[in-house]
Structure formats: structure tokens, C-alpha cells
Amino acid sequence: MIYQHNGIAVNLYSLKVIRIEKTEEGGYLVFEFDNAIIAILKDETDELLDGSYRNEPFSQYYEDIGALEADFKIWVDAWNEAVVS
Image 1 (cartoon, helix red, strand yellow):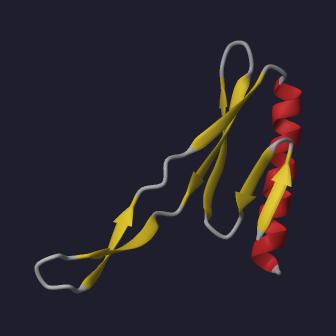
Image 2 (cartoon, one colour; image 1 turned 180 degrees about the horizontal axis):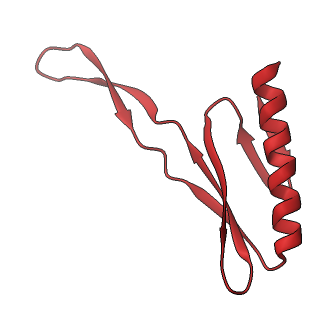
């Protein structure tokens, strides 16, 4: 399920963590994802082997902590709905 809010679109089924990182001036809403499983063809044997590759987290900066916390709640609620459905 792809969910979009505030300029960010996320596949909620591959989402692992949403967290807040506060700074002195504001903070970041950080999204982390499950590793990507990608099949790689071995040249020597022509067999496909699954490899696990880390997805890099991404973040969005907020100057207003209130807006950050409100968006965090929106994302967590959407994630919860996707998992329960």
C-alpha cells in the first residue's frame, strides 16, 4: 500500500521504522525500510542467488516541532491501518 502525505509517498508494507530526531531548531521525521531482496545472476554458474541489500533511510526536516509531531502521528496511524487491514 502506497500512502502519500505532505509530499512523501511510502510503501507502508516495506516500512520498518518511523522515528523523530529532535534538533535545537526543529527536527526530522525519519523513515527506515526493510532490506531489499534482489536476485543476482552468478556468471560462473548461471544461477540466481538472493541477496539482501540495505535500503537507506530518508528524512524530512521540520522547523516546527508541533507540525513534526502531528505528521508523525498521521504516518503512524496510516501505517497501523495498513498493517491491520
